[in-house]
Amino acid sequence: MMFQPITEDLLDIVVEILNSNTHYNILENGVPSRTIEEAKNEFLNQDTESYLIFLGNKYIGIIDFLKNNPNDNCPWIGLLMIHGEYHSKGYGKMAYNLFEEKLKLQNCNKVRIGILQENKTAKKFWTSLGFKFYASKQWKDKTIECFEKQLI
Image (cartoon, rainbow, N blue to C red; front, side):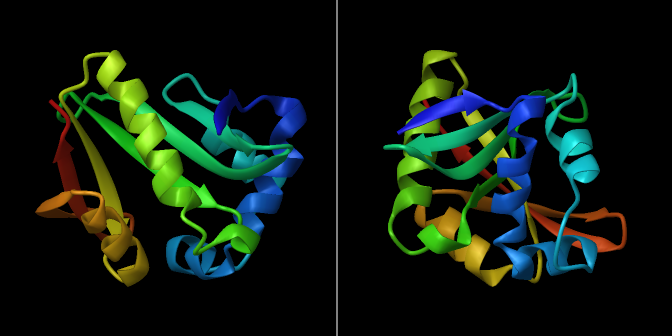
């Protein structure tokens, strides 16, 4: 498994992965699909590092990372999403564990993530990886539950 930086010529693959997760898109945006323009704005910016997750000869997911959130001076995972065809195969855990090793090499001592309150599947996933709840916040019109994991 490898991480490949998202570039403009890979946005069609990004959109395919995003749109294979209609349940999440509805929770986040109220619509089942995302556009190339939305993907470009979210994943091609100066603030975050965005990667496609590559396994064998296939792109199976996306990870988006903010190295230093100016609100709390902590690193945040903005999104870890596996293509719908590859759910429940352990790829999400494998991708996170590999990414965590990358964070440790960069001397990150903790990482945070915000989870939509209604996203019970994500809460179960992240808590199984050792993330602990610490606060609820408002984002747009949604409640986000904030979790963190100590790495060192």
